[in-house]
Structure formats: structure tokens, C-alpha cells
Length: 111
Image (cartoon, rainbow, N blue to C red; front, side, top):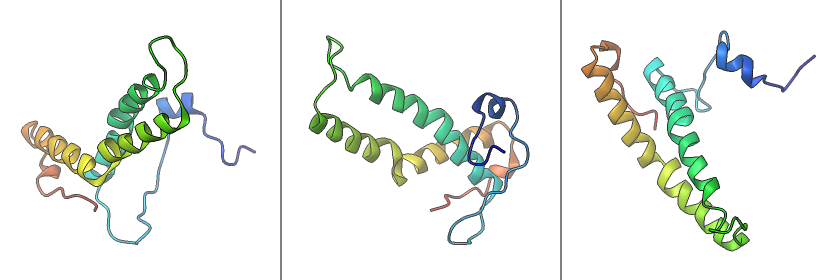
């Protein structure tokens, strides 16, 4: 009935059971999944908002395609790459361990 559709208002409340697998069929741990989802939800969403704001000049006019393309490429390099994720993972791991969450002691990057 609703194939391919996600009701984001409902997903914010509860999404139910989710199966997470890696394309390469390697193992993935619950701390890795938590870090990936947290990175996307907290880090990338906030950063994408800043990117969107930068697509217009001071007068509210949309910048040119080439300038926006450069901004997007820079955004991907800075915010979406392996280094950005692994920095986020390391900081999250430290916070979790400091809070007493032993499941994070051996957490490693999924890369």
C-alpha cells in the first residue's frame, strides 16, 4: 500500500525493528550503527542547513551554479568523508566511555 514511502513524523516517534547489513557482508556492531545514525542525524543535518543558507547572497539571491557546485564539493570533503566520520566516532566513543558505557570500549570504525 505504501511501498517506498516513509512517514517521517511517525519515524521520529518509533521506527520499529530495523535490519542493518553491510554491502560487503562484513560484520557491523551496534556502536557502529549508532555512530552512523547519530552522525547523519546530528552532524550532517546541521551542516546541511548551513550549506543551504550559503547558497544565497546577502540579498537573498541564489548564487550561480558553479559557485554552488564548489560549495557542495567542499561540503562533501569536509563534512561527509571518512575523516569527518572517524573524528565524530572517536569523540562519541570517548563520551560513551566517560559515561560508563562499556559496549563502546572496543568500538572501531566500520571503514
